[in-house]
Image 1 (spheres, rainbow, N blue to C red):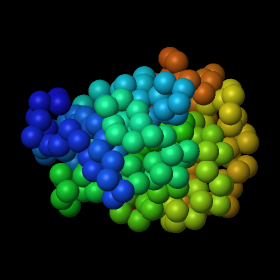
Image 2 (image 1 turned 120 degrees about the vertical axis):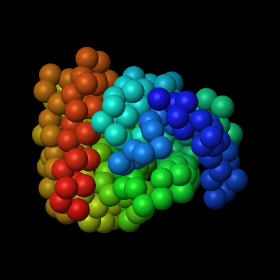
Image 3 (image 1 turned 180 degrees about the vertical axis):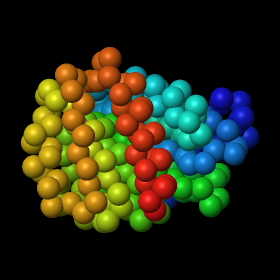
Image 4 (image 1 turned 45 degrees about the vertical axis):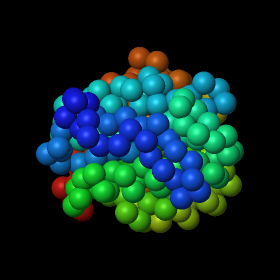
Length: 214
């Protein structure tokens, strides 16, 4: 799949001058594209984590191209970890790249863990939808997460036994958010071992529903 998008850049440049290692998957005629964000870089998170890696394999089989990248200070990306606030610029750079690579095609954001919170804190006005997978809802001030996403359709995939934000707590936390659905990932904990297929299927269903009703 990746070879079909080989001419696209494998480095992204942020507004503050960092360069991020990036990887695409899918086809040129994809009906949508998803920007994927990874878990906490200070705890070994990068674009090869099982969740973004599984999504990069699964989504293109449903006509959804993907762009995953390493946050600043992770992998071969330049810079140092910015506590989440600096990483918002990284997500913005990826959205810019996906929008330029697939003009006129809906762009979705799909973030996992730390990457989910950073995605929720990013201006989502250009996104067709946002999927936050196991968001801690604590990386950045909570009010940033609610205000940045605005009314963009949002799905929270909340593991039943998440060590950082259990499903019930997550649902109560976002009860006042517009156009937001919380789906419990039954039996899973924060690390989603054995549950990546469920996550991929849920993302595909969300993309399809959002595109059909948007």
